Image (cartoon, rainbow, N blue to C red; front, side, top):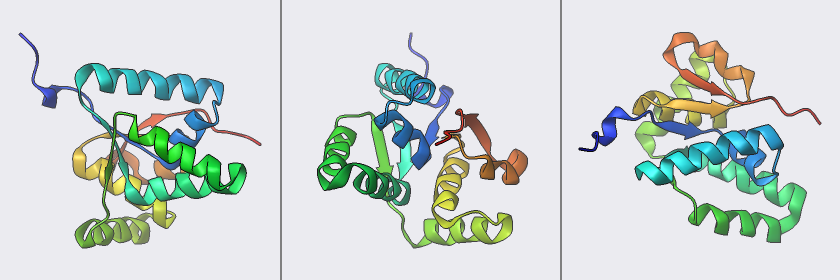
Length: 145
């Protein structure tokens, strides 16, 4: 008998997790690939805020041009990732986190989604440690240029 979906750990991707995957940064790409494979096998998509997807699209455009950004968008549609819209309530909760914990605005959306869904935030950004035990982190290696 299969276990209920709610018994499995949920994950929210920060922008740097997906950028690291698209740029094939070895350790990050391997860890994100494992999460994607698990999401497929469990039929339980990873989550990402639309605000954080916008960050990924911008970064891909900045470094790979418009065609690279559009290619990333096409790849996203093939992945087990649910992009969650930013409505008024979500934006208000994210702004509250930004104010209380001095987070960058887009990061506050990733944190808000993870907290709201009881999920682990997949990130390489040490800024999220400011939230303490409020937020569970799946820490990726930090990318150094």
